[in-house]
Length: 152
Image (cartoon, rainbow, N blue to C red; front, side, top):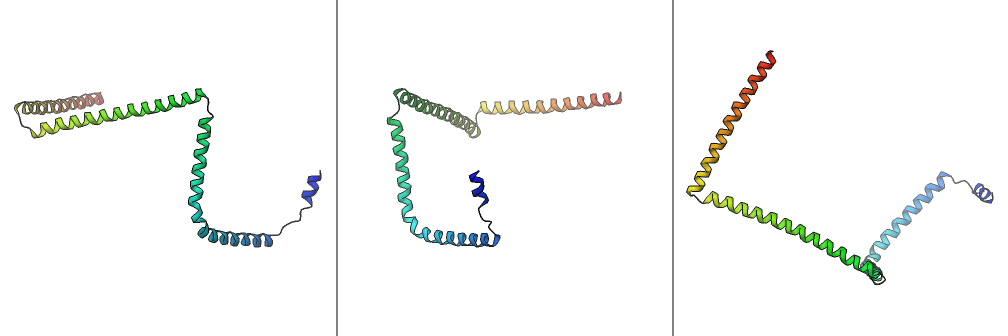
């Protein structure tokens, strides 16, 4: 009840004084920003160094007060992450190795003319011609079947 009376006894504030207060606060803020911008920069590097040292000290404190089980878990976790990363690197390496071998094989076939590659090339061309002819024939029959179906 006492708090309610105290709250009711607070005087009303008019808009004119609020505007004056806001303008004063803005000017004060601009003055502080202009002044500190020049004087605070030299201390910023020291502040950042202190923050990094503080963070390192907290991490070191956590590590020294850790139980044996937690230390072993952290070692196992780090080892597991490194193993995972190594396996991913091996997979990427094998992918690029196979890609490299494929490119070498294709490049060798492109620049080296021998009887085997010519025979393979002719066979592939014949296969593509047959495939193209068969697909044309297939579409032709399909169209005819659709025409017959539509007529009925």
